[in-house]
Image 1 (cartoon, one colour):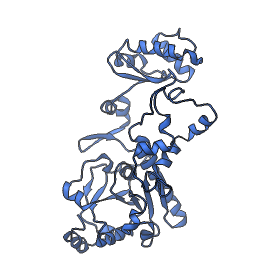
Image 2 (cartoon, one colour):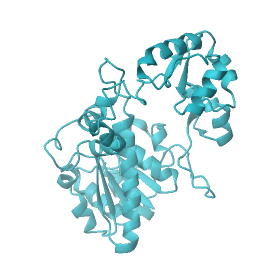
Image 3 (cartoon, one colour):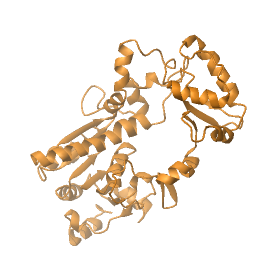
Image 4 (cartoon, helix red, strand yellow):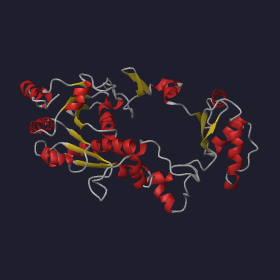
Length: 365
């Protein structure tokens, strides 16, 4: 599958990375000025791995014409502009479907293609706020806490777009025609919280930070150790809880099913965990079903024995990074090399002479 990815921030490149990681031929179309600044080697961004890049002036009629010729050979276009921008440039869905009716046109925005907020600026924090997701994140009595830009940009945005592309490609096999995908981060973030909409409306989910999975319960939280590091406790089920407290020597804790006991249980656990280092506790729980794990930083994660055994991280261009996921067992690993400039555009519908003329005019870099 051949993908033309219009250069953008975070969610668009992430969707392109997901597709490239599984074998798509992704060509990232940057601005000419971006290429001029960075020279023959694009910036070493993890999300650009496995891609090829060019610079193209899409405000030039010649640049637009060149993009259309390239789109005629493509399977997918990833559009990261605000609603209406691609149409004004002359590379909107109707423009490109006129030259390639099989093209899947993926549109990545925060607010979506319509609605009162569609034309306005935004960021991850705003998208997840409007989706209802941000209100649920944080500790009891504290303000909502955004989880960096994972929920909107990446999970609700880029990943949903990549999923939509796969759905549209699958449908194209039946209809022979491409689809337009309206991937909005606000929609994606809301979808990720589908489970909680019923529980909240049925009264099974209380205020932020008071519930079983949001640090309200002592059996699902993080605890500091003697060396200032942290452990993650997820001993929800009785069997796992019993395993944990037995190994900690805390079999006299009060009944955890009575919420009135939660503050006392939390304090007892916190005191116990602060009595040993993280490494000492790791040894205590090693190989058990206690559901207690160390909170690793990104450097430690790449060196953890489990991740090493699975090859969960790879090194590309001197940068340690997550390996492609999910895994298609029995398939080979795709090219994960750093992005490189593509100089020969013949396979994308531009002859050598045409490309040379565009370069001379400053339209192609």
